[in-house]
Length: 263
Ligand SMILES: C[S@@+](CC[C@H](N)C(=O)[O-])C[C@H]1O[C@@H](n2cnc3c(N)ncnc32)[C@H](O)[C@@H]1O
Image 1: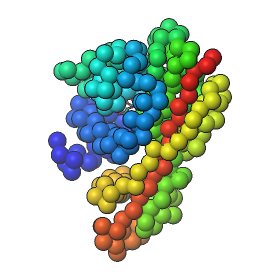
Image 2: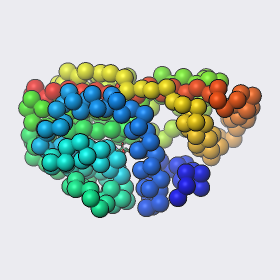
Image 3: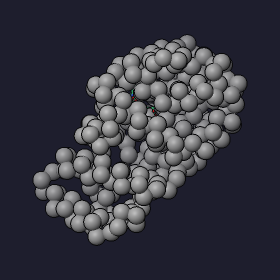
């Protein structure tokens, strides 16, 4: 399925068909390329290359687990997610992780089971990030690692042209539970008794990617904006059209949080 023909699928944020799983997987893998260098540094810090038991909570279509599998093929990799269609997609040939259908709020593992427990683009989508991080801590061995590899903060997003308009319209229509989760990572770790290193994962997107992102977001806004705000969307469109597409700029800060479980 081509990106263009499948764009309408991204209007919903939840994967409901195999086709959507394929589409989102492509999107997730693309997003991962933007932040690969920081992720590799984090893997090094956590000694992921030698970890024996690794869990990803909210593993979706398996994009992160596939990367980890190539880096540490000997590890026992486990993924858990509550979306069975995404999970089924991730169970492919030559993909070894153990994939489990379940909720991040109640992880079905004994305490002290994993050397690394991580998530990626996940806490922004959940109702109870604190409950989930507590669970992630519980299942992680003492002295081992808990990582939120990438959580964005849309309040820090910068766009040119029309930054304020993007912010106003997008924040009103995002379906994430907390588009400001990035700035709260330190506090969430602290509240479960973990002292986290917080850092920035971000890259400045290339004009091609900004164009694609804008196309997707305009379509989404066109769908979900209330009628009374449609004139603002028209204004945004006008501003975008008054610039060459090679001029467009968008920056979304994406944070990581990493902590050792000292209990
Ligand atoms: C944006 S996707 C990220 C998937 C994957 N981590 C990646 O980066 O490719 C978020 C995933 O979290 C899952 N999810 C959201 N809330 C959840 C919960 N409470 N328990 C388990 N999975 C959840 C969704 O089904 C979805 O697959």
